[in-house]
Length: 450
Image (cartoon, rainbow, N blue to C red; front, side, top):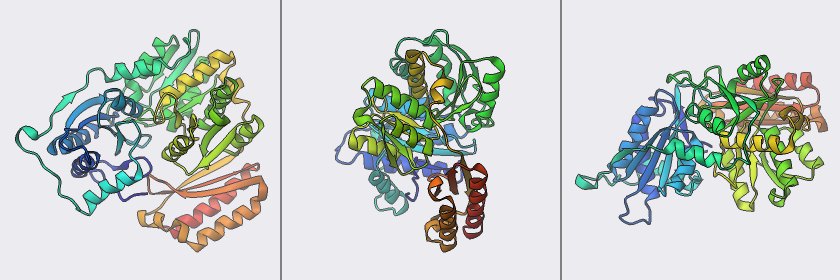
């Protein structure tokens, strides 16, 4: 993890940790790195945002930074993160920037940067940007007169993105009754239009963003709202997005959770049956449930495991030519259609399976047995997070839990890549046992990493 950039861009409290000054500096430094070996070419940059109140402030600041070193900026307004990744390539721009803190509350914001090919910046490019900003190794090449960049507004971004996702559908979804939770975020601009155009009968909730209600008791981080809504109103299924719509969690007709692991399992099996699963392989992270790994084994699917973070999933997919991968949290990457996780694209691929198989989501999801899992997010200090793997008392607590679980479960303790948290995850057959052991480890982490 870098000094400014975590596993998913730079992120923090808006106007303090992610300030206007920092956003402007990131714009300038990013232009310097992106412009290497391009001579006097004037770079073109896309900037999109989610719906949080600080988005305009930070998008204006980073756009000013780009313009000050001679880049032209196209501001897209409110769009999903994957729309930026798609449109930067579609419009032949040099880079795309998304101002978003994804699933976090409104006081947070962040900056994600995509290259011209639609992929996030690799670690080495982020490190160069960090060095320019923090170590002041190069002064920014400020422009004057006619060399200063300009800012224009994009008019067709939402329409072009919806058209792209619509084209990945196999037929239409007539007869499906779907409830959609937009988390008062980016999907508020796209989801209703997209799924209605595909023929579904849609009811959309939490789609009235006011700048501060993004992810607030709604969306994929609070899917219990959608679960109850689906149960009470007789929908066939529900789709829940996060603030920037790059994640999807679902609920079946009875309100049962269908998470990223189950979505990946359902789609990977369908792809294998139709000869579209390259090397019969799915890529997941070490945080995926043991039930996913068991399902893959039973269905002749190889499951490769990576570190936590969709960027590591994507790296493995690109390295070995695999077509599907993702995370339990609902980041799923369909490399045939996108360069990053996309909640609405994932929803369309899942609906394709439901339509082609003739089975309900409940029936499809019931094929995957999920092992009980407990996840505790322990808030620690920023310095404490860095000491996680050096602390002997924490190591002793982890080893004791692993010994007690034996072959019937597993322990995974890791630092969050985006927040001052340590995540303590235990899995096993006995839910009471893993709950007790997870709390024992969490208590040691709290005491040791203040």
